[in-house]
Amino acid sequence: MRRQCLLLDRDGVINVDSANYILEVDEWNPIPGSLEAIANLTHAGIRVAVCTNQSAVGRGMLSRETLERIHRRMREAIIAAGGQLSGIFFCPHAPEARCACRKPSPGLIQQALEELGCATDAALVIGDSRRDLEAARRAGVEAWLVRTGNGRATEASLTDGTAVYDDLASAAEKLLREINSPEPAP
Image (cartoon, rainbow, N blue to C red; front, side, top):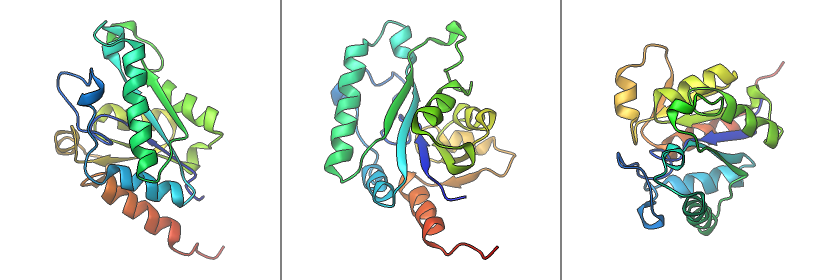
């Protein structure tokens, strides 16, 4: 089946991650090539959305208003690069809340798929951590890993043959090649 939806983790995949969280708008900085990758995928007809844990909200370190401003900056940067997001889905809970939406639970991915009207076999998750891969697996969606953010450390612990790419740009190139290659005859 042709890929229709791409669900991206935010920190470490689209933007530079921080061990101290992204707490201010000016701390959100795109990884080189990520915005153009999203634009290229958008132009290929793939709906791109973000699925991100944002526990800094639940920990009282980040207000929802500031998170919305950070997401506005991200959307504007993606639009300026020629892309578009079909949605931003986030878990605001701290880990101790034990919610169903915090990755590695599958709730956030399931919510995104439902709202986007995308079947699990037509979706792909790209993340930089084991929790992204596990959430995708639990939701029944294929996942790819990027080496940016926490990706190199995650890659060192992989044992399951997960596809690994240097960054979102190289993963997008692979995905676009898949889309543009002719379908095998039935």
